[in-house]
Amino acid sequence: MAGDLKTTPAVSARVRVAAGSWPAAVRAAGRGLVDAGAAEDRYVERCVANVEADGPYIVVAPGIALAHARPEDGALGLGVSVALLDAPVPFGHDANDPVDVVFAFCSPDRDSHVGLLGSLARQLVSGLADRLRAAADDEAATGVLKEVIADV
Amino acid sequence: MQLIHGNQGPVDELTVLTVCGVGMGTSLILRMTAEKVFSELGLRARVTATDASSARSMPADVVIGQELHTAEFEGRVPVVVAVDNFLDTGEMRDKLLAAMERAGWLVT
Image (cartoon, rainbow over all chains, first blue to last red; front, side, top):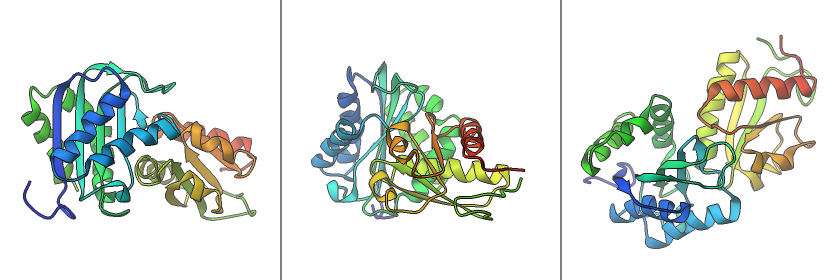
């Protein structure tokens, strides 16, 4: 991804991810941020630790989770990634389990991601999760996720 | 629709907090959904996304979040709304109106 990570989000998407558990699913999504150069390894572990400490509130809608930690937890830039699981996993959420679309994002500060998340929310309302589920490979899914950025 | 009663008596703008654990992810999604809901209802609201621990010291008419985070505000904030689907304006609207009615707030 070219450009300044402060302003241009790094994007990563993986299809057919075998997770088996929610921590593995969160790590798979977080790994995308690390591979894209947007976060350090420790950021991924904070994403997992936040759910362990605070419960499955990151499951924002049926089947959809949005993992993240704080900027100071090892975020290097603005990034968004998604892991599309080959089989849904329970997060322990009463209403929205099981989850098969796991997003992760990171932001270099407390404001840079606001536009990105707004676009993500708008796109999720208009069927982004199903478009991602239908993607044949990583490249196709990455292309779909990039629509989110185009909408910022 | 006009709100004719708030936390401090009659108000023309509600102070609304959307809360989550960290205060910069799910609470932001909630804020966007909440802004849509208040706008559809024709109610003026200033919606702030924050983490649950900061929200404890912030004055509010309405707190919206997952039950995990809203439970502690019951009895301290007049209108507490626990939602499951953060993207669903219909669920939030129904639960908001029910909570406002329970609080004895009149919406006409």
